Image 1: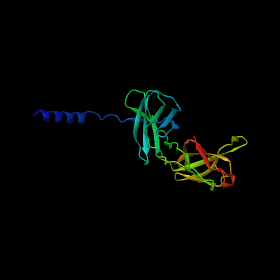
Image 2 (image 1 turned 135 degrees about the horizontal axis):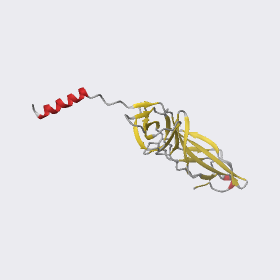
Image 3 (image 1 turned 180 degrees about the vertical axis):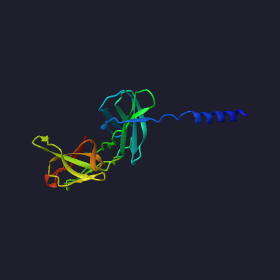
Image 4 (image 1 turned 180 degrees about the horizontal axis):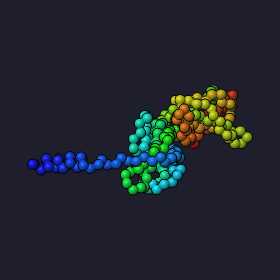
Length: 230
């Protein structure tokens, strides 16, 4: 008998006489998973076990845009946090976690935690303000499109009694840019904008832009339009 045939026969014999490896066990162990932070490119998760038991580590799985989950990472020991990096802003990600128990014999896992969803937030817009003439009481607020943004909220504040008041929502737009009209004569207006994306129908905001300050001066005042930004 040739050597290769002998080897094949030996493997067949072992497969017939040896029992199959024991499947991994699943243990009913409640894990609470939550999202603790999100940036433009990362999402941080944390979790806890309600009934502590010896743990070897945890397996984190992720889904992105579909109901299918795939293994993402394995943590060692009692680590209870994980940061998923290099993400795309505006994309909704789903996560779930299970524990690998520290016990003899076949591998034993807990059941997966209930899944949670999170989104990497859009970045901060860079806001600018157009120059104006004395004949108009409008100013054009401009910024470039922010990756992952569904829309933008624009806030304004006015300078009164020696100081700027609190910001108030001026308007919302789904595209970059906003035309502010109805500016009173010789009143300073301060503007800022922030982008948002949607998670389960709710707005998730990125950071605010820089602010710009603009003032309308009418022709009757005998002065030109003024705008400045910071």
